[in-house]
Length: 452
Image 1: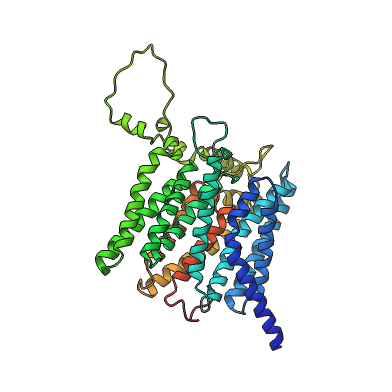
Image 2: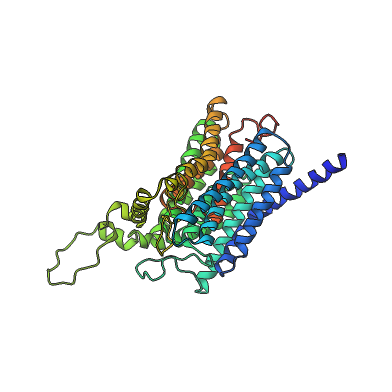
C-alpha cells in the first residue's frame, strides 16, 4: 500500500511540474496555431485530460470531489445542449459547436487545476516566483516575436483589408486573442517587476518591460492600451499610498510613474493611437484654430469620433447581439433553457457575438449560463469573505494588482470577448483567478485552508 501511495505521489509531482511547464509553452502553442496546424488545440485537449487525472489523484477532500462532480455535470450538460440543437438546428455544424464547448470547459477546468496545483506545492516550492517569472518570460517571447515580425515585414495584420487601421499580431493567429493575452499578462508582469528586491535587476528589466508595452500598443486594439494604462495607474497609486503610510515602496512608485509616462508618450505614435484618432497630428489639430473651408472643397472622411459611442466601444458587436436576441426570442423553450449553441440558430454564417457572457447565455441558455457562472460567483464570494474575515490583512499590492487583472479579464470578456471561450487567453484568466484565491488566504504557508 505504501509503495502504491509513493508511486501516486511521484506521478502527482510530475503532473505538477507539467502544468508549470505548460504555462511556458503557451506562446509556442499560439505561434503553432498561426501556421494553420491543429497541434496546439490537440495539445490543449491533452492537457485537459492530464488535468482530470491530476484532480483524481489529488488527496481526498470535499473540494476535490466538488470540482470533479462540477466538471462532470458541465460535460453532461454540453452533450445535452448539442443533442437538443442537433434535432432543432438546420444546418448543424457539429465540429464547430463541439470545439466551442470544449473551449468553455477548458477555461473552467484550468481554474480548478491551478488552484489545486498552487495549494499542493505551496509548502515546498516558491510557486509565486515561478508563476510570475514564467508569465514575464511569456510576454517577453511574444514581444520578441512581434519585433521580428515587424523587422522582417511578415506580420499578420490586425485589420486585414482596412487600410485606415494599423496594427498587427506578429506571427500569432488573432489580434483579439493576442491583445487579451498581453492585457492579462501585464498584471503578472507588474507584480513580478515590483516584487523584485534587487533594484539593479529592476533597472535591467525596465527596457524589456517597455518592449512589452510597445507590443500591447502595436497590436492596434483598445484592450491592450486600456489594460496597460489602467494597471500602471493603479500600481502607481498603490505604491504612492504605500510610500506615505509605510515609508517603503518609493522606488516602485517612481518606476511605475516613469512607465506610465512612457506609455502615454508612446500611445499617440502607436497603431492603437492611429486607430483611435489619438495621434500627435490629431492632438495638434484639436488645439489648432479651425479655418472655414469653402463648400466646393472635397468633403473629408467622417472621423471615427462621429460614430455612435456604442459602435466605437463594441466595434459592431452590438449588431450581432441584436441578431442573437431576435434568434433567442423566436427559439423554442428547450433552446431558451439549454441554449441555441455557439452562433445561435445560424442559417449559413457561423458567427459568435464576441461578448463572452452573452455568448454563454444565448449559446447555452439559462441553465448553461447559471452553471458556467457558479465557479466565478463562488470564488468571488470566497475572496470577498476572506477580505472581511481577516480584516484586510491579505490586501497587499500584489493582491490588488491581480484582483484588478481578474476584474479586467471579466470586463474584457463582457465587452470584447476572447477570454471565457478562448483557451489561448483564457488560461491566463484561469491562472489569475487561481492566484487571487491563493492570495486571499491569510497564511498560505499552513494547511489551514482546503483546495477552495
